[in-house]
Length: 312
Image (cartoon, rainbow, N blue to C red; front, side, top):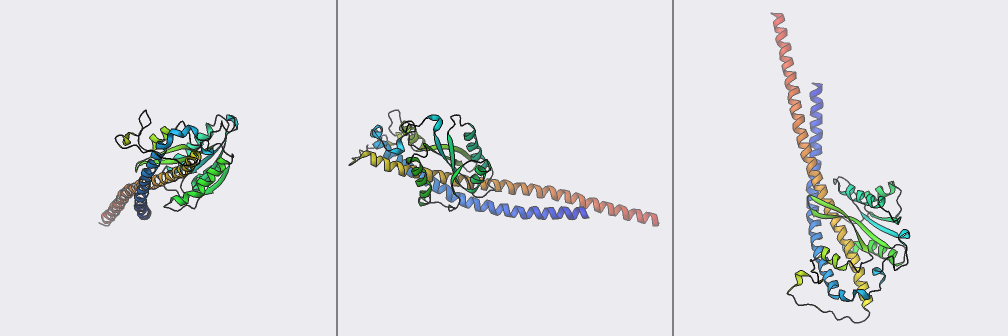
């Protein structure tokens, strides 16, 4: 019966684990619902903010604000460029391949750095911080105490640091490695440039973030609507520079929301798979336990029958 007792102990242990994973699945599902709602709501705001830039984008060639200035205009050679990469991961594990995917994307970027640019890391989340320190990558700052449900105000320290480091000339490009939320079953790691704001890619960025644009650069969703002409008083460069700063902050905020929704959905799926695997293991162990018990019963009956036969 020692084997049966061991199997019963394992069944009890797996049942306890299943209760934990099921509870974590329900919690992650609740958090995912709220995170997805915030992500979708901010996408709409980001789309409208891009539409404002479309309306005033006809003077984009006249912009001389630092956030629109690329590395070439700074007089930097390709071999001496410095890049700041903001890596967004989670503080906790048990979320499937969420962290490993975006970290692999970052490591691939570091390996394919053919121009020999210096890449420094700003980490958001403990998992990315640990991974980058393990390989000896330089980390200029770490943000590991963001709330579960972030607001635009929580992004201010990150966006201010990125903008200050860029405008001061410390870095020539600011990239963000994050995870795009597609659905509860699909999350895509991505790396995007947020600074400098590319004049040439402005229309493409608008099409990617918001409504698709036609060849003439007019939003197809705005066809048939009255065109809005903005009267700008004062320095256009200052105005567009201020809008660019807010846009950078909004982009980073959106990427954090996308990553948060991806984390919770990935954790929910991982815990669901773990609960299902625990259920299958319980069934298999129960079958083994029943077989072992039946074998013991059969053996005892055989011993009793043999004993009675020898007595008679």
